[in-house]
Image 1 (cartoon, one colour):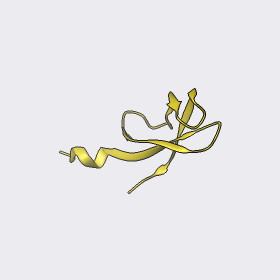
Image 2 (tube, one colour; image 1 turned 30 degrees about the vertical axis):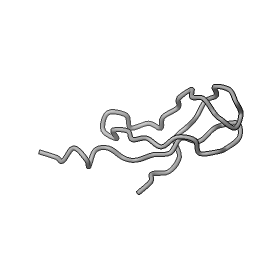
Image 3 (cartoon, helix red, strand yellow; image 1 turned 90 degrees about the horizontal axis):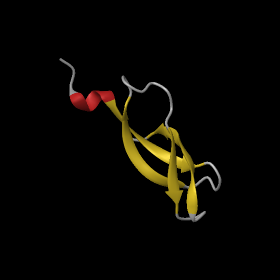
Amino acid sequence: MANKGEQRVKIALICTVCKNRNYITTRNKVNTPEKLKLKKYCNYCRKAVEHKETEKLK
C-alpha cells in the first residue's frame, strides 16, 4: 500500500492579476491531475480573484 504522503504534493497559488504568491496548500495528484484554479482573496488586490497553481514546492 502506498504511503499517504507520496500522493499529496505541496503547491503555491499565485494571483492571476498581480502575480503574487498568496497561498501554499497541498493537492492529491491522483484524484486531481489537472492544475487547480480557485477564487481566493488577494491582500494585494484587495478583492477575490482567481488564483492558479504554480510549480511544486519541496
